[in-house]
Length: 420
Image (cartoon, rainbow, N blue to C red):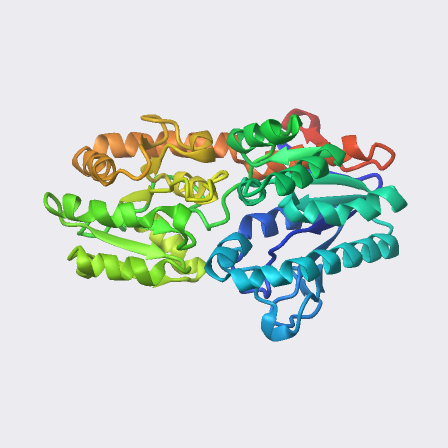
């Protein structure tokens, strides 16, 4: 069965958030980039509003116009991107001085663009603080506001009651609110009383078109972790598990990504005596990441609740592992439980528990039949529940409900019988 989309009238959509790719080869928020591109391909006109980075001017990515708002001299415009604003603020509190100009510039730039382009829907990503940027367009221009939470903004706002009240007010004022997982939806309801619609994201790493994993497994089992090297990823507990695993099996661990914890974790790997079996690969190309997913034996995601209460809102990288038919070991925290079902699509372990991580990894290495079953069931689950077409259908239907006078593209199901 094919699905085609024929918009009767296209929507003018503006999307605002703290992060968007700075060039065609920038791998920031690939899931958001994919979502924007899919909505645009359905005939809607999408403009992205994002902060400048080191003086970056307006540009286009995949044909999408990206409007960059300036909030400081170029050398100071480093509040966003990379590790993300919450982690940068923790690492360098001086950056807090930029938050006021960031918010004020964002408010003005968003209102200006919404007026000029006669925007129908403003889609706010990370509503704290970006929900503030939707107030003027909503009040004065009748723009409908959709707010999407990813859990990080809730942890950021939770640092004090005033920030929490601002976020709650922004969510209540929105015409619709979405969450990337049931975990995030629960947090939204707790602080605002709003019932959010769960709309997740899908995989963005290239996947083999069909069939089981190709026979390119390394002689020594390969463990893989991919993500930003920040506190809530919990990589130190995976490193602490390595001596326990190596005591029984030869393995290699590849860690892709970068962040402010990298140096400390590299030092930890040396202190633990496992540096020879651990590769910190940094940011890697899409091609190498795809190859790593295909060739790894087990994907391990040791996420934690960090000292600010932040954790994984969903864990898109887990979906990518499942789509590559890989057995997964992951912590039972946050939105991870929406992706990993214990002993069905992977193995869940308590957070901050190196012994549990090691035990689960060894279980999969010692039982190839179990590893294959989890990989196949994970693939089926991810294909069913994290399919990009279905995700885009849900988002487009939400846009249609929010802005009913504009006929968004609705899927027309064409069966083989009808086509005949």
